[in-house]
Figure 1 (tube, helix red, strand yellow):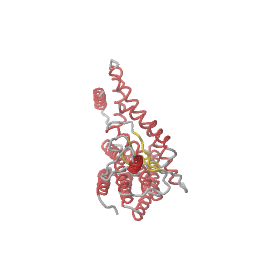
Figure 2 (tube, helix red, strand yellow):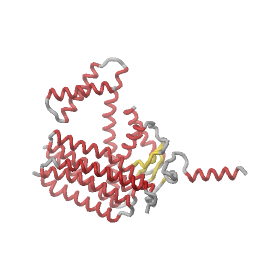
Figure 3 (cartoon, one colour):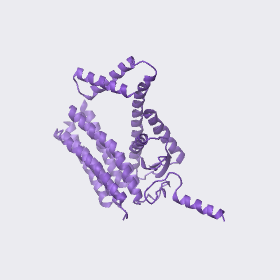
Figure 4 (cartoon, chains in turn orange, blue, yellow):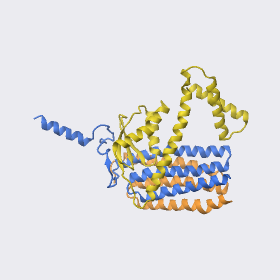
Length: 91
Length: 134
Length: 158
């Protein structure tokens, strides 16, 4: 029971605050690269949040979503950086 | 008894994630943000997933969670390496108080990286030789 | 070497099937049991390499986790302090690892340690450029990575 309260009133809010901070960086970010790194961080935090949520609801099926999210996060980061490296003029 | 273990894992995981977020907001240049955040977030999510795996304690769920953790640990350095390289070629600036940059001038026009002297030093050497010869 | 690893895995699977318990601690126990059985049965000096390698691997993993925790605490303190005590620099690091696999493992391990990040590897695979947060001087940094990470890693892989 304490675990449930801890997850609901500590872990989820802390993750939420962290996500808001990352969103500020996405808004401010001087270059494109800052925004990409922030998006990557956001996806990794999403995986952690899904893990917490699956404990709260006692539904291990949510971990499948986390797995797909990890794959998509890695592929998107690599694709973005590859594209930006090949681009001729960097504004 | 095992509840205490879950509580410790979840607390540390959430706090590490928060530290990563504060780090990405406070660090002054791109490379420092990159080197701080990628690993911290991997460790935070890894601890939370470990907690989930130990909480359910069914073999297939445990294997799935461990697979995600392994995947995160394997891919985070690769992604960081690629985005850092692209940023250096895209001329993301280093912080003004950086101590040393030995990568400067090491890239050719077609993005090949040399290991010995940089382009500037080679040019200077050529000029010296040209000075001596006549 | 691969033969003995294969035998060890087979012994582990047999133990797990016979005991009928597919939890991860049981897998670990089966592996340890198979290792002891192999150690007792294999004869000849040439075949002993496997038995040095597995304890070395375990020691390397434990040591690496310790290094990672230490570096993590340092980075956390840096982030949370009001005035940051950072001195970032990009340093050229001459490689001792030769093959692609060794270089990949080394760069993965360096990148996973908080505070250091591999920027790029030169085309002729002689030099690696590392970004670090805590720069004191060049020689001590190169010495630290060589003694703590590279030599230990090459001991395990080679």
